[in-house]
Length: 93
Image (cartoon, rainbow, N blue to C red; front, side, top):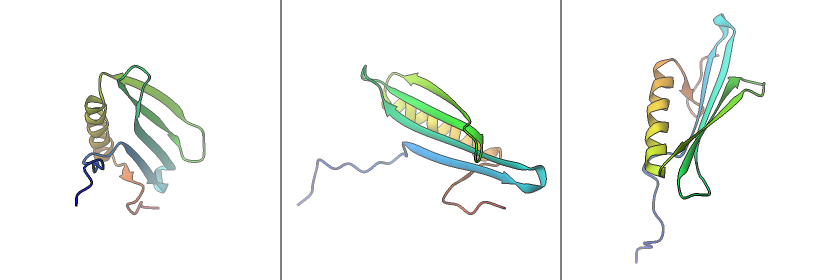
């Protein structure tokens, strides 16, 4: 009746954000994703920069996936307060 092997994700493991403000000539992106590492832990991969350009990357190692997702959610909240919006939302252009 129920497939117990399938578990729904309650927290996202990847987030794409944009901040576009043409009056300031600002077109930025910020991508975050949680990836497993080879040693049983998890990594938070962060990428950011100007839209249309390569940008920078930072990899943070965490003990487990839960801690990496917590870091992703905290960083996402901080970026949202600074004006970034999820890619699925309508960005002001």
